[in-house]
Length: 424
Length: 215
Image (cartoon, rainbow over all chains, first blue to last red; front, side, top):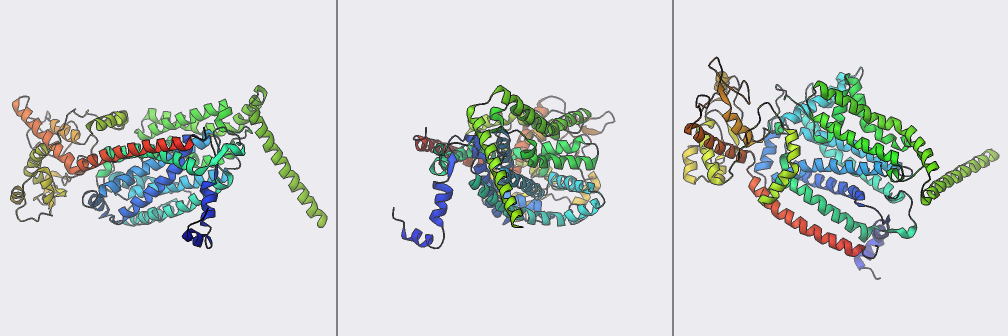
């Protein structure tokens, strides 16, 4: 096939055609991926949406304690389609978390964090943390009552750091209370973090195209069972995007205030604490865990752990059986309990801290962490039980193959070491 | 379009019930959202409420959108510019001396309360006379705002009916003031959704065709 002269010119200077071939038209993807594998692409789309809407919002927004609230109303009322930009961005934040949580749930359910995909899982973990930080800082910017008091409560948590706690809080806020210095730095960081996120996404994608997608069967497919990303999965993803956009736009155009607390339409007032401070829905489970621990430092440690513990999954799950929940009834049950437990924590996090709520919160927190703590034992026990009960032939073949790979690698290492010793 | 709205509201209704909840249940009331109702509501707000409250995100020229004629706006604004925000003539210091607080701005008040216009309507219906002869409010105990319209002493009857009709209009205007682009947003949203549904169906068909040789 003859190439367009411009493409020809570019290809002599930059691997354009090679790149398209390698990453799109000849990049192989398991043909059996379900729509659960759509959410990584959706997350990328929402990231782009947030960056574009955010850049335009920043053209009219004023990061100043005296002007911020008014500038948001200016965007909403005076700027042409400013309301659309703002509602896309505020709804986009919730959409981002929804998509990311489903993306994570899929990875957990199908065991996609297993070797050799640990680096994908860990870059994902860093992306989750960056997203949380970005969302938290962005939430301060409208300078409403919830913005202000949310930031006040969360920055206060850093005061639990032993010895230097007080200084850390002042350092974060840039002042003794959340104020003008805070809103200014949060704006700068809210604008800056997406650049970091884009960088980490790049690493995430390079890792993906190196190790390739996992698939719902859990076993590696034969070469002919893989099909090219384009046009098969580009169109499958685009169809998924269409469905996502229908739901997303229904919120943006018909219920944009659904994700905005009524209290955030009251300008920040440092002298008046709202009766009930609640974080955004996507922080509720972690907030419930924070409140479940009576001691502040303990609460902060538990909350941090509840987010970071995911990183340990490749080591906590000790089963050799691939495919996550596919062949493992016990793991599937634990996953189900975990998802229900997060729903319960979300509910508890939204309620005022009454006695009953505190007790329910503590039980749910215990279940949350016990799922992770039980996993190393349970996965081994389940593995032994399943070996006895029998597994499909392909699964056994894959386990044997992984074992062989391991043995061969160890053999190679041993021989290399021996040779080195001989040379010495 | 109404149908889509209703469907969507039903879809998220269980969630919103879960999100709200207070001591006094908000009254169920249907607020009309035509320009005539809004204008009548605006007339009450501009003659009574702005005695003490500002409406700072609404400018005189915005009143055209609720059906005020240029002449009517000129009569209202006096020497103020068309682009001037609608502000109370009472100095805030004086208001603070009288009531203990500066009365809140009304331009976002509907959105700032769970239930929006229904909250406003319920608030006005809940003034009552305490045993000590002072007026208080069931929905907002200890409210500083006096019972300007004399609801507590009104009793049931034609007066109360007329008052409630008038408050529905006020609530409707305040909902508009808190979200003046709602109508444009929803009519645009209708076309956006139609477009997206057709676009997605077409993508679905294309996806099936492309995948035909795989299955």
